[in-house]
Image 1 (cartoon, rainbow, N blue to C red):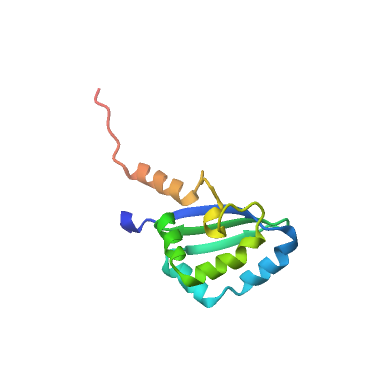
Image 2: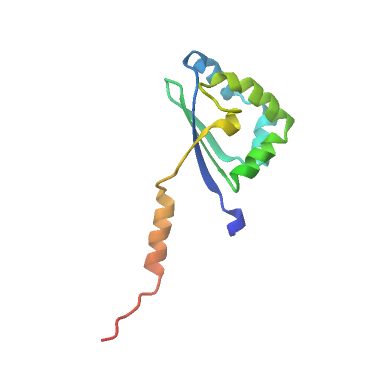
Length: 130
């Protein structure tokens, strides 16, 4: 994979209004096919949403560029319809759900650390001259 193909991991948090959790789950059990295709074509890869019983939502996806993925979706008609329908589901949302989320900072990734460990083990060691 070249550096231009690097996928960045994006994790975000939102809060679903408790009284709307059942409807939110129902809507995500069968997302519109044109929305699914738009997400994939604009770079939202390996996208998952996790929802706690109290409405805490954690989303995760991988993309070459968060800004490009968001801009790509903003340019689609289906996203405008989806965001308009989803906006009322969230507590204290500043903007549309796909741009107003709180992005979380990744502090650990197993594969990254294993790759670093393997690279360090494969690097030639310098021998001291005494």
